Image (cartoon, rainbow, N blue to C red):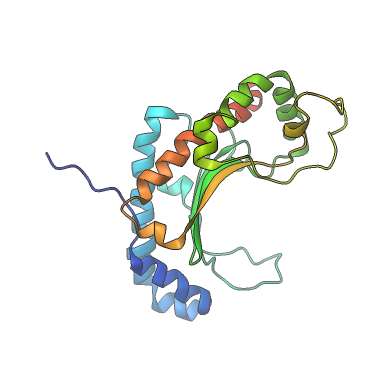
Length: 228
C-alpha cells in the first residue's frame, strides 16, 4: 500500500505571497484568486487535516480543523492606519480544547515571502491569566525545567522567547528560584526557517517535530487555566 506524501506548499505559493506583498490591492487579489485557492488555501487545508490526525498521538487536546485553525487572509483595517486589505503571510493556529481560541497556550505556524515560523506558547495572556500561570510556575519549577531545559527541547527550539520584565513581578520574592521564568510576559518557543522550507519535502516532518517538543510546554502552561 503506497504511503501518502507529506503535505507542503509549492513554489507557486511563495510566488503568490511575493506578488501579494508587492500588489496588496483587491484588484490584484481578485485577479489571482484561483492561485490563492490552489496554492495557498488547499495545501493549508491538507496540512491542517494531517496535523489533526497526527496530534491524536501526542496532543489530542489540540483543535485542528481548517475552519478553526486557518487565519483569514483579509486584514482587519478598522482600527489600523495601514489600510492594506490583505496579510502577506498564511498562518494557522491550533488552540487548546476547553479554552477560548486566543486564550491559553497553543501551537502556530506561518509562511511568508521571507520566512517560515513554527512553534507555540502563550502570546498575549490577560493579566489574571498571567498571574495564575506565574503562580503555577513558582509552584512547579522542576516540572517546567524538565520540559524547557531538556536537551531535546533546546536542540529543537532553543531557549524560551517573549517579552519579559526587568524585575521579578510583584508578589514574588526577587530571589525566587524561578525568578527568570517569572519575568516573562509572553511564553514563546519556536523555530524560524527560510521561506524555501515551505516547499521542501522535509517541511511537514519539520513542523511536526517542533510541535511535538512544544506541545508539552503548552500543556504545562494551560494546566492552571483549565482548573478555573
